[in-house]
Image 1 (cartoon, rainbow, N blue to C red):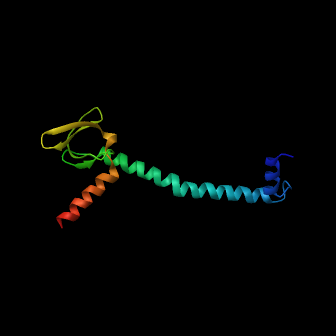
Image 2 (spheres, rainbow, N blue to C red):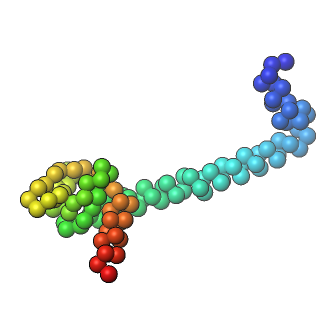
Length: 116
């Protein structure tokens, strides 16, 4: 008997159909449910919020890129790019997907807190 067979027999009690299979199915379902609740669902919500934020970008919005570049949206182009003003008169062209939703919100909250 190989080591892998011994592991399977020890885990299943050695008797197929002894009621352990229904318990195993319930536990497997519970593990999948917990995995979905704590991993997949929050990640999908985060992606949805990121897309909504990028779709609602407007000229004058202060943003932070995923590379950490802070700037103000100067122009939104039709080819899914934006012009970002990083200094007065200095512009860079970026993909919209390079804008970080979380970092932009954090930076805007910090600026609002400093103004109080």
